[in-house]
Image 1: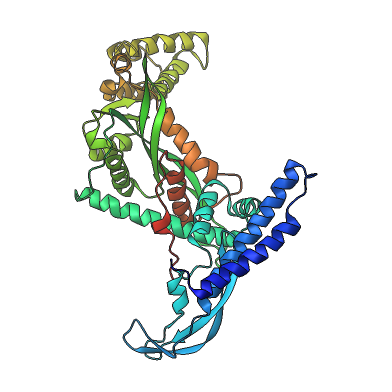
Image 2 (image 1 turned 120 degrees about the vertical axis):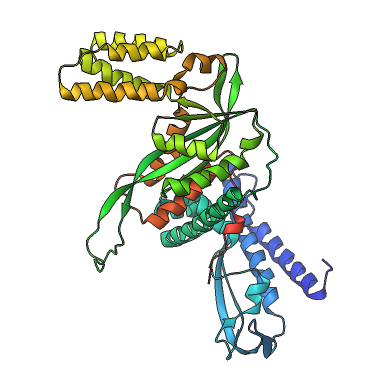
Length: 447
């Protein structure tokens, strides 16, 4: 940028003042490292805030016009000078700028706001990004406290909530749009070409509340639980004896039903390279909705029932036959697990069929469990799956339910408005993914 006389004067004045400040505030040679660190941080913070204020003030000194074109096509008149306050990463700044009003459309505007890229919000984009990330990991009060501890930014918990919910809602709307584009075949082909991708789905319950106000004007607080669905697409780390650990993962989570969750998951899978992966493996706990959603969104996957969920079904049968947690029950389960690991699902079915319960309830249990193993027989070829190096457990998606959903949204005393929970779910799933998206496009605050 060419140096104008006004800008040269600003720089010279600032440098002179900064020199005086450094001469008086820099620690002497007796200071400890902690004291030096504190002093330097204080000077840096003050200089940054001061320089930002000077640069903004410089923009307010330009001559104003009496009339300016309005977006409606008419002319807006200068009304008065109005003060505007904005919280920035260096602290809050306030400045006065000319304000115009249009009689034709009734709208007002400040040209400097437009020049500075400001919207209706009272924070900068960087502060909003901080608020969104903090709110994704901590409750709104703690987020505001943490921000004030580590930065020069002080905002109310209500500002944290309003900002984070706005960004999360915008992110979710964009995800829904991408899901529609994916369904229509318009999403671009991703650059990634994974060797093997895993796809998992599960659900967790969240405490929600009906519309309510603290003053009781909408009646008493009425809370209930609603299922949140989570999906994860991940790439494992190959090991000598099969896949171990997780190299990278991407999450999506929503309170919406499977008809909305499915397309969101499908778009996520596409973006992670589903169509370019050499192998795709779907892992679930056996719930029918999971297999139906996977088959619709990611056809052609190798489907695997989580081994430990299958074992839980074995334990249910063994406890009914031999008594809860008995040695005989344990031996029976271990024998059946070994059969499953040798692809001998028929042997497991014969063992269940050999049981002759003497009550209606136990006969119903045997019938239910027999059908479970028979229906999922192809998904229980654990010997084959282990030889190919596949994961046979759904630990990644179950851990995702705890980390993405429960650790933030299901703590003691919490109850959520559905729209707020949906926004925080969108943010938390994004931030806990290995490669979070750039949230800047979703930071605009509507008027």
